[in-house]
Every structure is written in C-alpha cells, then in structure tokens.
Amino acid sequence: MAEKIIVFDGLCGLCNGAIHFIIANERASVFYFAPLQGEKARSLAREHNLEIDEAETIYLLANGRVYRRSDAVLEIARDLVQPWRALAWFRFAPRWLRDTVYRVIARHRHRLFRRRKALQVPDEKVKERYLM
Picture 1 (tube, rainbow, N blue to C red):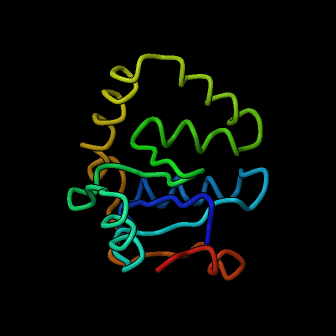
Picture 2: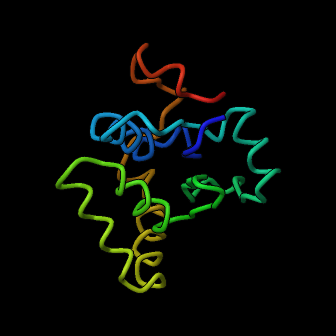
C-alpha cells in the first residue's frame, strides 16, 4: 500500500492546483492522492477517524501518522524540490498561527479559486497514483 497518501477535496480548485503543483515539484514519485469524492478516502476516513464531511482540511497519511492542515502541507513540502522544500522550516512556527492562516485560506478558497464540477486527473502518467 502507498506510504504517503494525500486526502484532498477533488472538486476544490485550490486543492487540485496544489496536487498538480506537488506532482510537478516532488523529488520522487512518493505521493498517492485520495480525493474526498472517492471510496478510498471514505475508507481512510473511517480507518483513521478523519473529518472529511466539511472538506476544509487536507490530510497526509505517512509513516504511520496522520498530518492535518498546516502540518500536512509542511510535511508534504519536505518531499518537494528546492526552493519549495525550504517551506518545511515553517513547522517551527507555532501551530496555532500556521493553522489560523490555513483556515482563513480554506474558508475562502471557493471564492478565490473556481470550484470544479468533476475531478481532474493531471495526465495518464499519474493516473495510477489516484486512489479512488
């Protein structure tokens, strides 16, 4: 099974853009993607007690741990190329501050980024990394 799974809102324009960005900038193909609209995300939610109904949180399941919100974003950054990898240093900022910024962006993401009508897989090369 995949070691690093990102659980995200597949209909969110910002979230989809972030997934495309991760695919284009990861150092190695280590991530798998489970959109909230798929059965795999629902199964992972039950297994790991994830709150996926509100769809305002990104999750990273990696190394036997569940990362949420800014912790997930910064843990993902550790597997990106430079200069993006340097963002992981923000994990030393207080979580309450990081998560406050995260929640503000999450709350307004549909106004800032167009909501999708259907999940868009970037291309055939990464299709097998989408866990539906």
